[in-house]
Length: 216
Ligand SMILES: Cc1ncc(COP(=O)(O)OP(=O)(O)O)c(N)n1
Ligand SMILES: Cc1ncsc1CCOP(=O)(O)O
Ligand SMILES: [Mg+2]
Image (cartoon, rainbow, N blue to C red; front, top):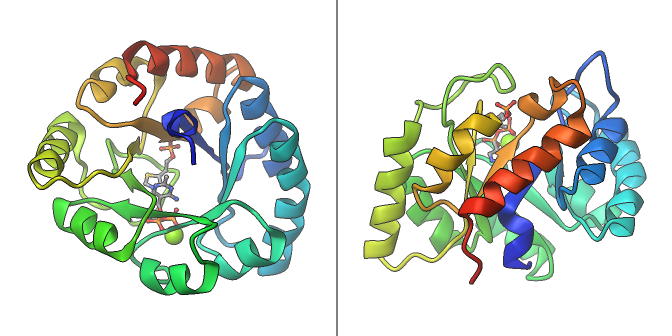
């Protein structure tokens, strides 16, 4: 996976305003090239149906397509990868099923989580929450800027090289400070879905991230 793709991951979330497909369309229109289909409380059949609509759209835009939680749906649909948290299938088990060709992301809230995910062979880490958000139930403790600074510093000391994507309640105004903690990118949902123009907001967010991002 190209380093450049890891700048912004748009995560879908149920709203009365937009379908999952429409929200993915708007993020892609705004220039995002990394989409995560997250459909909490939906059946496997519903997630599979939506994934099969969004996958060709991501292919047309040269975007990476990740599905939340469901290793088997990723394998069946040929999506690019899966995102797994502490209550999902362990990353090493998912790796045995998916092999090296698929991307596996993992959720971390502490440096211990990062170490464990690194050992297990994760490709990137969604690290958060930055602040409180209603998009996810049962949030882990809030990290804030200091949380990211400490995690990034310890990773450097321990030579752990893994892209860290900050997540949780992030808006465009937060991006300069978060990017300056040394994280690789940003994952978000609500701030794009609540915007008057989600595509324009995606574009604005990407421009902000790019001001602070150094490409390897
Ligand atoms: C990029 C990214 N980071 C973290 C998460 C959260 O995953 P998880 O802890 O499994 O919680 P749910 O999203 O499944 O509710 C994520 N999805 N994406
Ligand atoms: C999936 C997830 N994991 C931690 S916070 C979060 C939700 C991110 O969405 P938002 O940007 O709306 O807070
Ligand atoms: Mg999960």
